[in-house]
Length: 85
Image 1 (cartoon, rainbow, N blue to C red):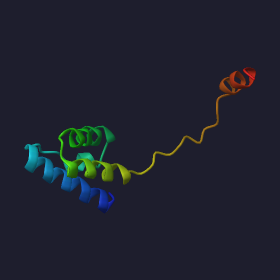
Image 2 (tube, one colour):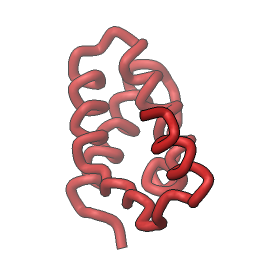
Image 3 (cartoon, one colour):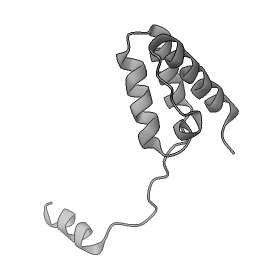
């Protein structure tokens, strides 16, 4: 399930882009794979609307952080780093 705040921001972005630019963005795609959301947020920043720019930043702030890989460095990478010292 998606974060309700994130959904609300996406819905507001959708409504404003439709009203101000005639652009119909898919709210469910904004909440899915990040490529679509990046394109929409880029449009928000480029269109000149202060509110859309602010909403784009809010949308980014609600992102779930991407987990850092828990895999250790490969032995080749470790030895290459230690050899430089």
